[in-house]
Structures are given as C-alpha cells and as structure tokens.
Image (tube, rainbow, N blue to C red; front, side):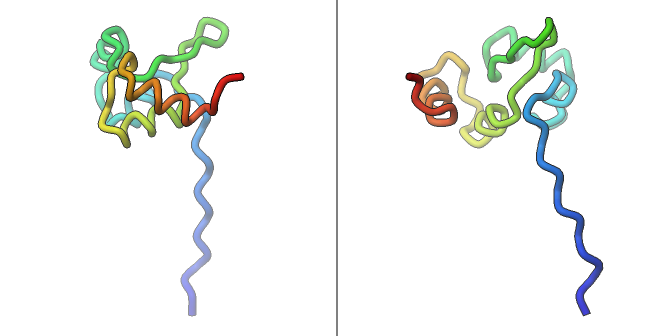
Length: 87
C-alpha cells in the first residue's frame, strides 16, 4: 500500500525581500547580505513602491553559477538567457 499522498510543493515566490533572499543564500545575516548588495556581489534588486525585492530565479541562477559578480560578463550573459533577448 502506498503511503499517504504527498502534498505538492508550492511554487516559490517570484520576488523575495532581503530577509527571505538572505535565507535562500544559505542563511547569511542581513548585514552581510546588504554589504554584498552594496559591493555588487549579489543580483541587483528591483524596487516596487520603495521596497527592494530580489527575483527568485536570479538568485537561484546566481547560486548555480558559483556567485558571479553582477557586473561580470558571465552574469550579464546569464541574465540575457534567463530573460530572453530584448527587442
């Protein structure tokens, strides 16, 4: 007999605030998270109504590619692939 049906995982949120984003990046502290952001070492956030939010897919891509600097050619190429070619 099969065990009780597992509940499907909820899809991740599209945008994360700093606390959730820092948790996703291994549970680093908020102060370190903000330092990395100021230094351009993590993906750039977007701003909605003065709230800074990080795109979940970009953070996952950032981790999968060993944390490239957001100004690097590698990161810029990855973003083009993720977002598609601008028209």
